[in-house]
Amino acid sequence: MTRSPLRIPPDRDLSIDFVRAICLPVVVVLHAIQMGIEGDPPRAFNALAEWTPLAWITWIGMIMPTFFIAGGFAGITTWRRLEKRGETAGEYIRVRALRLARPVFLAMLGVLLTLAVMAVCGADAEFLRTFAFRLAEPLWFIAVYAICTSFVPLMAALHRRAAWTTYFTLAALVVIVDLVSRFGGLPIGALNWLFVWLFVQQLGFGVRDQWYSRRPRWLLLLLAVAAYGLMCVAVFGLGYDPDMIANLNPPTVLLLLLGLAQVYLFTLLQPAIRALMRLRPALVIIGALGMYGMVIYLWHTVAMAIVVGAQQALGLPFPPVLTPAWWITRIPWVLAIVAVLAVLCAIVPRIERIWPLERARTMPLPAAIAATALLVAGVGWVLTQGYLTLGTAVALAAIALAIAWLTVGGPGPDRESEPLEDAAESGASRDARRL
Image 1 (cartoon, rainbow, N blue to C red):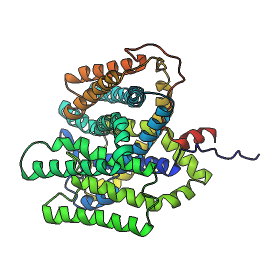
Image 2 (cartoon, rainbow, N blue to C red; image 1 turned 120 degrees about the vertical axis):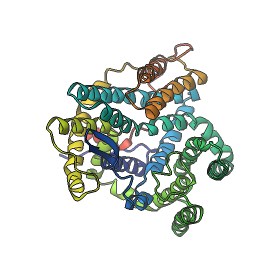
Image 3 (cartoon, rainbow, N blue to C red; image 1 turned 60 degrees about the vertical axis):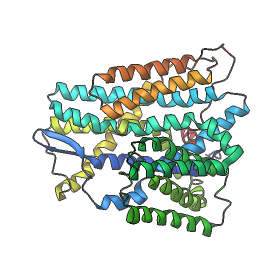
Image 4 (tube, rainbow, N blue to C red; image 1 turned 180 degrees about the horizontal axis):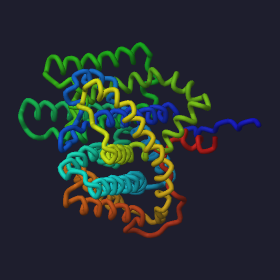
């Protein structure tokens, strides 16, 4: 039987789907290896905190800038599509926030349920507290991404009217905040959670408009080398930590430079990636990763908790971190997490189908921003305080209220409209469903 040709929407770039999908296994493996458990009673901590080779690995392996570049590409694509249909910025923020809020709410409930089962089975209370805090750490991406995506309509307008001014202004703000907080002692470094990631997201706008692909390849390579060179100056000349993970909280100018290096290198690799994505097996694999992307990112912490709980229930030891025995056992440890995650990928999407469809009701911009703020506040609380605090119930209530508001819409009149499409859903994943 002849297979039908693959139909790719004209505004899709499968190289974006590729990098976004391929980054997911990197995130899962890194978080899995970072989970260290030691002591009697046991405590959870960052197993790689004292492993010095990690610092230099992160110059390549820290792929969060690539996530935001891909997010910027998807964000401006969705916004332009909706804007062309006459939709408002409020509706754009509504659809993007809801696509984040619903999965993260269910995943947080999944973590809490797993922790509750572990507690009932006799897990040490202090271990659960430290373990729950580490399980909350990946939520930073959801909070920051929700904020950045709500800025897309504004940043897209600035990109259209004054692209270079916008880039240089954001870069200058990052440098000023970094220098003032680092050398001036003023506690303003948290502002770079916004400025750094808005800048990197803006790079995705440039990818969408083919800014970089129109440059000579030798120039892109030179710019990538220059970005890494400036990172070396910051590390060896200004005393910045060489570990990109350490430069994540709060973000520093090193992540801005890493984002620049990654967008140039990605552009150099785009022709090869696009050629690869013309192969059906590659499209199926990337499509599957894209289809379950949110489940993989949000539920891999649940998978870790299930594996740890099973290990404790079976009485299996936790080898001292960074010892030969620990490194060897990382192989079955990661494979066990992947196996549980595969099961969750089969179950979670079925649960997510219970969510009601969004009501076709106008949502003004202030309302969409307020609902997004509720989402960010709820996620931010659990991120900074951990799952096992009294405020977690309030945080979950805030997220639930945000979901309800975003689903119902308003305050505003009902309107006749087809469901809003989110270009963040991988085109490869849609094709994978048909293969």
